[in-house]
Image (cartoon, rainbow, N blue to C red; front, side, top):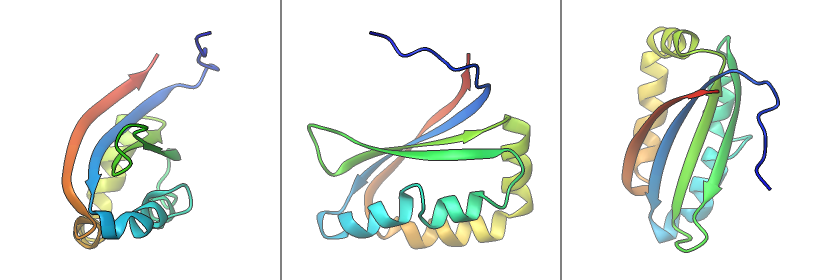
Length: 108
């Protein structure tokens, strides 16, 4: 059965991460729905939620999905908080082998 959209509109920013084995627990704590990124994004108008997904075949591969009301609200927040965004991102990079920006997708 296919899940149906509940009428929610907005955009999803998607990132893929390959996490260092010794950093898996820290990564999950940092990127989960109560982690440092979500606490930071909650300061922004238009932020809805973040979902953290783990690959069932590769337990060190994760995807984050950040839900925002609009791309404009996300971009405004990022511009206004760029210094803090970059600081959190720099601290987070130590946990991963690879980080890939997948894209920004519109919820239909």
